[in-house]
Amino acid sequence: MAKGIYTRRDKKGDLTFYIRYQVQGIDIKERVGRKSRGFTKEAAKDALKARLGELAQGKFNLDRARRPVPFSQLTKRFHEYAKANWRAYESNKKVIKYAEDEFGDLPLSELTSWRIEQWKSKLRASHKPGTVNVYLANLKNMLFRGVEWGMLKFNPAVGVKAIKLGDQRARYLTLDELNRLLEASEEPRYPWLYSYTILALHTGLRWSDMSRLSWNQNVDLEHGQLVIRQKKTQRVKTIPLNQARTEGH
Image (cartoon, rainbow, N blue to C red; front, side, top):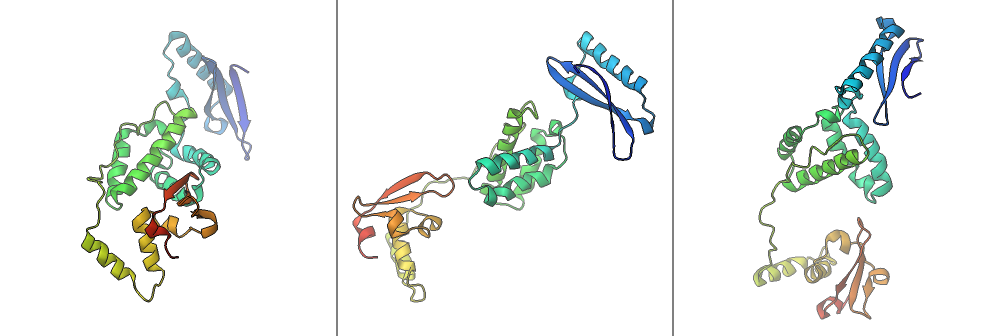
């Protein structure tokens, strides 16, 4: 039915009146009210007549007529999307939850860039700048998907800037610092520490990558390289081996 009046009865038997009409091919449904609260079929007819009159006069506001979409509805759908598309979804669910706890049932139409700026300031009081940027990037991604799914018209987080992390230039160890690090790594209680330190110094690998290395899967001595599959992206990267990396075990 393109336009008209229809009813629904809840579990208690109470009748609720609705109106339905179309705007530029979009099917719009609006709740008029419950019979138990005095709404009648005549009231629904009047509501529909008023809406059709607004359409005819060019005074209709689609956003005002639509039922507000809460932020929680977006996060519910985003959880489903992330579960199917993010390899590291299980370990990143808490990132989504931070935004979910903050905005909850706030209508998406009321989520502004200023409201997001306030949240960013709140996060800065208890989180490191880099962590705040991760949460902010995640929120922007969620809202971007919301626009893509037709849940809101634009992304209010677009103009919210990430926190500048300062001078991120690489810092290199001095020869004295290098020698002291190697000396400290020769701790008898941790016989493996020296080898890991050498490997880290010559490859720049993180502990998460080094701890997963195995001779059979990652070490290619024939071509003089390490072959590593990154956990999050599943991309394969190769690291050339020098003499210091290949001598000994």
